[in-house]
Each structure stands twice: as C-alpha cells, then as structure tokens.
Length: 106
Image (cartoon, rainbow, N blue to C red; front, top):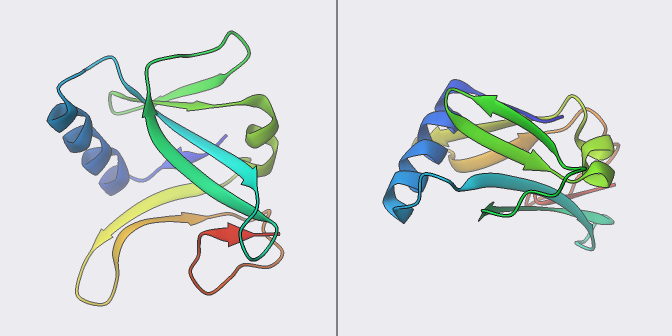
C-alpha cells in the first residue's frame, strides 16, 4: 500500500475541503500506458469497492484497487511546494525504470 508524507496528507486534506465533500477519498491507481509501460492515476472518489485496500493518513482516506496495490507496495506519495519542485510525486521502489516526467514507470 502506498503511504503519504505529512505534507502530502495536508495538501490532499486541503483539496478535499475545497471540494466541499468530506466523504471523498484519494484513489491512487496504476494503469497500463505512459512512456514507460505504466502510469499513475490519482483522483477523488466516493465509491469504495469491497476489495479495495484502504488506509488513513491524518484523516485522509486513501483507496487503492487490489491490482494497483501490488505495484504500489512500499511506494510513498509526497507533496513539495518550492521553487525547484512543486506538486505531488510518487517514490516507488518497485519501479525499475521511470520516465523524465515522473508519471510513468515499468
């Protein structure tokens, strides 16, 4: 299961509050595609399937489907807000190769 850093959890919580629906969860998924074979997908979701893997990080519910959970095991979602780097980034120890944009891996 993917974990969230404190800064990522804080930012996701801010975005959920801005959406106006406290029941939303952050869904993180891995889909075929991208320039390296797989790509990450993140979006807010209110539907949680019975076989989804869920975790809570400081009040932020994260949901991952079972097949994505295998590829995200040990991965970490971080948020940076600086001059050099800004936005969400996934550090995935399962990725053997990543692309330059950081959004796809194999």
